[in-house]
Length: 220
Image (tube, rainbow, N blue to C red):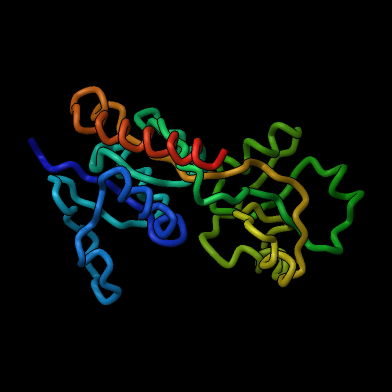
């Protein structure tokens, strides 16, 4: 059978996910931990699985299209893309943060309450539009991939929708959190077709499910 491909995101979620992956039997080789390596694909110890390390949004794309069969990514990414071929069977209970609306501290509260149209900067256009639609507001989303906090300062958008953990970055840039769109945690995701046709994918899901259940029991 062809090699299984497991997609993981760069950054904070990966740091938290690696111990969980090890407990579920997914252990990357030594090159994966080599900070000087520019490789994107890595072998796993004692298995026919390989890991690919890509951007979080790309994890969902690789898995949804079947180029990778399994992945780990935040629930924000899962909900933003809502791919029909993507299944998120296990909440890993890591990577906690929230997706929030923020605006300048000195913003006009009355204008905010009466607004029917807004320009919002975000890398989550779908979640942003859906959130404001539920409030009867049409949101024009300016797509940015970083430096979101500059958008209100430079007049690009009146509000932003971005990930928030402590809120410190918002405060340091003169912004205040005004609404929480969703709470976020990392999920194990799989390609639906691969889950149905390759028993190895189901075995990985069960290993992560058992590991997550044991961690939850231990925390209680």
